[in-house]
Length: 147
Image (cartoon, rainbow, N blue to C red):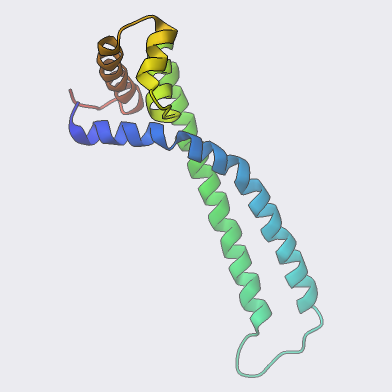
């Protein structure tokens, strides 16, 4: 596995919790924007046209619609990243999954020690299995990964 692919896989795993958190937050943000959109729409219904251009309310309306579209696109992006990451993790052995989750996803302090106690293996074995698990994850996630 080359260094670029290794860095890419580590990045996927390290951002997994962030992506999951954003998936939970974005629907609320969309709802807030839609509520603001409703208030902007209701306040524009009685305005008289101004010569020489639009008004601030129209600009806010367009801006709110743009933010909603960007949030929806972000949600689809985060959902696909999470789905692909879990799909690749599910292809690994349970112990390999646990090693990657502890070391890269949850980034536990003294994660190797935690894994030694959980899996009843030595520290050197944890690091060797980490390398193997990361390679297998990379293969599952990006099937054209070179070794």
